Each structure stands twice: as structure tokens, then as C-alpha cells.
Image (tube, rainbow, N blue to C red; front, side):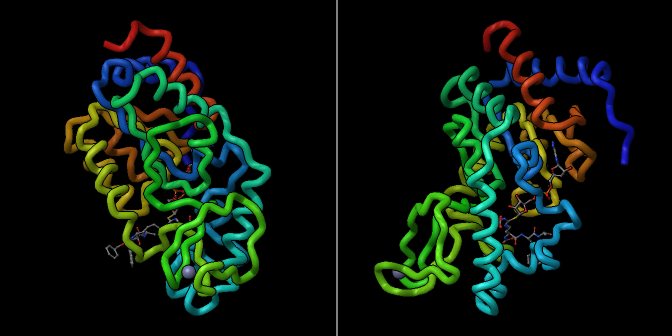
Length: 260
Ligand code: BV8
Ligand code: ZN
């Protein structure tokens, strides 16, 4: 564990990162569970990434769903229930403000999170790489429905064809939603400033976007409470809680001269 950076250490780094964001033609942001952690949503690798003694990687898979759909639905229904009491935090609102400040066409938010808190905070151009917890998909006819966060049966079935529903999230070993992944790659390759926040940068292909940003010559800014595999690819590391660092960063972007 590294020593926590004192706020005064952060100021020059925030200033540099804010300059890059303010002068960027296009900004892309990649967020992970650390952004929602500030809202009380537990991350994937907290308590060793266990849920009811199961490794998340063992529950969020097609084979787990085939083997024990009731267990997998218990996992997702618990997370949906958790979300009912959860609100966006200052980090989510800061990213929404940054998007408004930079204006349309200059900002893309790419998230690994499935909690829709970015949209709830006002973010508009959001690419959900791993789906979302509010929608369900029929394993029979493929219908996708937004069921909000209301309670679902232990083994919910399709009203149309009667087959078992599944969460509309991307499980391990599943491909990312076609179109969404391509859009995320394109936005990253076109970015000249790339902000990666609150992700352990171990899940692919999402984490590969950081390499794509570097290869595109973008300035890479990492915000996290600790160093990650992304840290060696970042030009600047802002180590602190996203709910504090992001508002400080966006305040500096907005306070500076208007975007070029
Ligand atoms: C694919 C949705 C191929 C579900 C998720 C072996 C066999 C098979 C596949 C693989 C394999 N080895 C590697 C792979 C690929 C695999 C992978 O990457 N595995 C990892 C574990 C090694 N990837 C896949 O399987 C992907 N699909 O490869 O398909 C393919 C291609 C074509 C055709 C067929 C197949 C699919 C990956 C998507 C899996 N689904 N989620 C659900 O949510 O239930 S991934 C899951 O992890 C979440 O989406 C989450 O977003 C994601 C990443 O986690 P993080 O967001 O980073 O969260 P984490 O807890 O890890 O870290 C939190 C961070 O926040 C930490 O850094 C912490 O320091 C920081 N933090 C905490 N608090 C704060 C903070 N920062 C700031 N402020 C704070 N307050
Ligand atoms: Zn159906």
C-alpha cells in the first residue's frame, strides 16, 4: 500500500490534468466500481471479491447460470435491491458536469459499471461495456426489458414465451455488446485526453482501452485510491477518493479559460 498523497501534493497534479482535459479536442473516460463505491455500492474486489463465499468470477458466468440459475439470480437480485437505496455521488455529478462543460461530441463516458448511476447523475453519452442491472433478457426469445429495480421472482420467466430470464449484463467469457465495444474503442482511439477512474484495470477487453489511449497519443490520467496496472500507463496519477478528486479536477477544468 502506498502512502496516501497529501492534498497539497495533489494540487499541481490536478492543475496539469485539468489543463489537458480543458484543451483536449476529445475526452474519453473509463470508469469502474470505485466510482460507485462512494455511493455505497461494494466493488468487485473488496473483501477479496467474494459474495456469499463465491468468487464473483464464478457466479457471473454462463456456466454458473446453467448450473444454478437460482444462485445467480440471488446474486443479481441482491445487487438490484442494494441499488434501490443508492444515489449518485459527487464523483458521478462531476463527470456529468465535465460532459456539459466540454459540450456535445467532445466527451464519451465508457463504464464497466452496471448500476446506471452515471445516467442518474445526468451523464448523456454513456457506453455500458458490461450491460446493466435494470434490464433483463429472455434466454428463449431474446426480448430485452427494462424492469427498473423492482423485485423479480427467484427464477423470473418471460411473459411472452415463458422461458427463463437472465440479467442483461455481460458475464465472464461472454462477448461485449456489439456496437458498444466498437464505439468505446473508437472514442478512445480518437481521444487526446483519457481519464481512467476507479478500476482495478484487470478485466479485459475493457482494461485494454488504456493501452489504446496511450497508442493514440492521448494524455492518460488515472484517479484511484491506490495504484493499479493502469498506473504505469498514466501520465498523471491522482490518488484519492473519486468522490473528492473528481469534483476538484472538474472545478479546475471549468474555472480555467473556456475550452479552445
Ligand atoms: C471476454 C458484469 C471473450 C457482470 C463484468 C480466462 C477464461 C475466460 C476469459 C478470460 C480468461 N482470462 C481472461 C479472460 C477475459 C475475461 C477477464 O478479463 N477476466 C479477468 C477476471 C482476468 N474477460 C471476459 O470474460 C470478458 N469477455 O473476454 O469475452 C469473447 C470474445 C468473443 C466471443 C466470445 C467470448 C467479459 C468481461 C465482463 C465481465 N463482467 N461485470 C456483473 O457486474 O455482475 S466484469 C466486473 O469487473 C464488473 O463489470 C466490473 O466493472 C469489472 C471490473 O472491476 P472494477 O470495475 O475495476 O472493480 P474492482 O472492484 O475490480 O476495482 C475497484 C477499483 O476501484 C480498485 O482499483 C479500487 O482501488 C478502486 N476504488 C475503490 N474505492 C475507490 C476507488 N477508486 C476511487 N475512489 C474510491 N472511493
Ligand atoms: Zn421470451
